[in-house]
Structures are given as C-alpha cells and as structure tokens.
Amino acid sequence: MTLQDGIRLDATARATLLARMRQRAPEPARPAVTPSYDTSFETLPGFEELRLIRATGEALGIGNPFFRAHEGRAGAVSRIEGREVINFASYDYLGLNGHPDVRRGAQAAMELYGTSVSASRLVAGERPIHRELEARLASLHGADDAVVFVSGHAANVTTIGSLVGADDVVFHDALIHNSVIVGAELAGAARRSFPHNDLDALEDMLVHERGSHRRALIVVEGLYSMDGDAPDLSRLVVLKERFGAWLMVDEAHSIGVLGAHGHGIAEQAGLDPARIDIWMGTLSKSLASCGGYIAGPQPLIDFLKVTAPGFVYSVGLPPAAAGAALAALDVMGEDTGRVAALQGNARHFLATAQAAGLSTGTAEGHAITPVMVGDSLKAVLLSERMLARGVNVLPIIHPAVPHKSARLRFFITADHDREQLDDTVRILVEELDESTRLLAALGFAEGDHDAAARAALGGMT
Image (cartoon, rainbow, N blue to C red; front, side, top):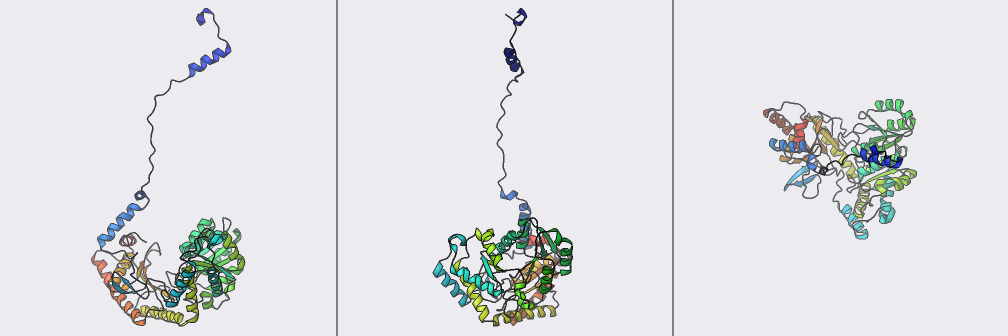
C-alpha cells in the first residue's frame, strides 16, 4: 500500500524518513594532499644576499680578514699562513697568554681536577679552585663576593635577565656590548639607549622615565672596545644614587688596563668600588683564560647562584681555565711593570698616530685605538694591504659601528715594542694613501660603501 491508500506514518517513522531525505549523497573522495615544509637552510632570510656578497668579494680580490688562522700563540707577534706578522688583533693586554706561570697554573689544575668538572656546580661540579678564583676576583673589585660563568657574553645576558623584568627599565650607553642588549630584551624590560658617554642625556632620561618603572639598571663599560674611551664613573655614581638605580660596569676591557695596578676604572677614577652595585668582567683578556664573572654585594651573588640560568644550568668553569686565571691574577699583582708597559705603549701609539695625521676618534690611549677610515670598503682594503705588509689588524664596519665610521682597530699590549708601533704607523699612513688611490682608480668615489665592504668580508660583519 502507498501513502495515497491511506496509510499514515507515525511520528518516529516520519522523522526517520525525513532525515534520510535530507542526507546528502557522499562526495567523491579527493586525493590526499601531502603538506610541504621548508627545511632548506638556503631559503633562510639573507642567505641569497650572503651568496652574492661573497661572490662580489671574490671579484674585488679582497680576502676575508675573519677566521684567519694563527699558527701558534697570538701575542704581539703572530704567524699567519707561514709568515710572521705584527699582531694588533688580540686582546692579550698584559701578554700573559703563554706566560710560564700561567701555563703551570692551568696544568696543575688540570692534573688535580681533570679537563672538565663534568657538571653544573650546583650538582657535582663545585671545586675548591672555583671558590678560590671567585674570592680573588671579589678582592680585585673590593666586593663581597663573585660568581664565575663559563662565558662572558652569558654572564651579562643571564645576570641582566635575572635582575630585571617587564616592570623595569635598563639605561645603557649606545655603544654597549651586544650581551647587555640581548639580556635586557630577553628579560622583557624597557630599554633606553643614551648617546655614547653623554651623561647629560642619561640624566634627562632618568628625570623623565625613572618614576615609571619599579627598578632601574644603568649599564656602561669601563673601557669601550670599539672606541678606546672610558665613561665618567664619578658622575655615574652620583646619578645612580640620586635616582635610585643599580649601576653595572662591564670591565671586560678595563681590568689589567686601567689604574696603576690594573684594577680597573674605579682605581683609575679614585673611587671606592663598593659604590658600584655590579661589576662584570671577563677572564679572556688580561687574565689569559676564558669565561666571565659578576662581583658585588653578597645578596646579589647568593641570588645569582641559585637563579641565573647561565650558571644554574651550565657546566662549571673548566679547571685549566680557573687555574690560568688565578695564575694571571698572581702575575698581574706581582709584576706591575706589565701594566705600566701596556699603558706606556698605548699612550705612545696614540700620540704617534695623531702626530702622523691619523684620526683616532675619541680614543684616550688605553690599549684600544681605532684609526678612523670612514669608508667601509677602504677599511676592508686597508686591512688586506696591511697584512701584505706584515701587520695584522682588523677592519670594523657597519653594523658593528655606525655608518661612515668604519675603522681599523688596534689592540695594544705590554709585549709590543716601540719599533713595532712606529713601523705600524708609518706603514698605515702609506697604505691609507694607496688604498684611496686604488679605489679611485677602480671607480669607487669617496663614500661609505657598506654593502661592498660586507661583500669583501664574505658577509661576516
């Protein structure tokens, strides 16, 4: 019988029928699409530019000054590609890298503790030599205590990241080291940069912004590694006390360099180092080792030892590195003639360069002297030509320094002699003139050829 014959569907049957009528016919199966993911390093941003600038460098016939292999100890003299050269590219300021006492210190520590402590110091990596080194570093800075990290860069990053956060602000010099910037950014703190050594600008920032933040940290360097000048520490202390801020001084390049005994910028300025909240330093320069440290009040050090990720989650300093640094501190303390020799050489090089008409920027004769070239391509070419003349010195170009401030950077050490310094200035004057002539002959007008310079450097800026 049909519906027309009078058969009626109950409510349940009707609902079932209507549901079936509303059902769509199944769609035909579509072929499966396998997602495509990019796993190529060559498609990373900037890789194609890197390829192009390397090719440009080869076309210009200018070598890459980075990663030059030194075939032995790189002191005032080094060996590159089988040839002895005067070396101005190493910051072994006191000439202690390879010193017999420093070697013995490293060897003795290695014999006793092995080549590694094999764990974080919190777990099983603590050794007496660590605490001995930290006590010596604290004494160097007139501080309560110190904590040593396996990396100077990590020391800044992890310390700043542990001390400040989103409600805080970091004021720093425009030429501050990358590690300070990275630490502030990772911490999420507000970051304010004031023009290089312009403490009037810093004061103005503090007046207008200090009250908007919970904590404030001011960070400067004891000696600026690109320019060779130092800040006004006395005024910085006044500012930090007036505005209720912490003052952190990065002494990576000033320990062993500034002060009659090489104790750094506080000794140079005649200030009580206890008035500075946080001292940072590295073991890789005057102390002829590797690693970084923070020195300061006991609560600060206690806090960092249990909260700073770069300490808590990192292996302890290798015994040989600790032993070398301890021995270097001994030599620096016992042989102050090295500090005096360094300071004399630095002043002599600066005076000689200036007398020869070279531009040395704001350098003050403290172991680091830039010779300002301005044009990036000229700086790269000049470095290449200096090496051919037996002098190893590296160019510094944008973005490591601002546009039109490319330079050659000279690290002066206690082991350089006056003849080497005088010969270098003479060669530099000759090659600076020749580089200008060559670039003009190639059709490069005087200017700031950052892109061409990066090409000549193989992209390593």
